[in-house]
Image (tube, rainbow, N blue to C red; front, side, top):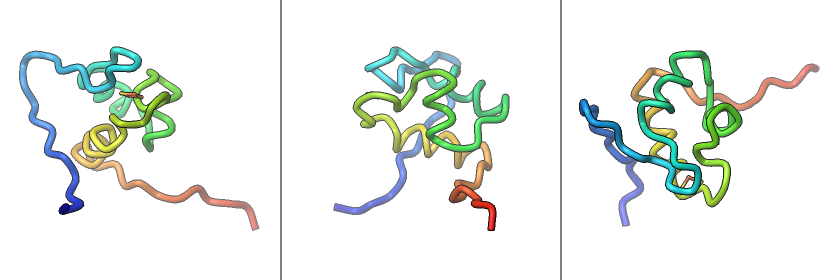
Length: 77
Ligand code: FES
């Protein structure tokens, strides 16, 4: 099995990405544009990816599509 990120097609219709919490791609994109910087933050803001986690690869693809660089947390030294 090839481990490649899913391609998320932009359409005029909204697509439910997170079925656990009924969150659409538009809502996730909106949270990313509002400043969400990772899948955990998207989950906190709108619930996508906050339960079973099966939608997280799509959330991460949406983050990448919006140019969000997924970085590890910075700890104070
Ligand atoms: S489908 Fe999104 S958390 Fe389960």
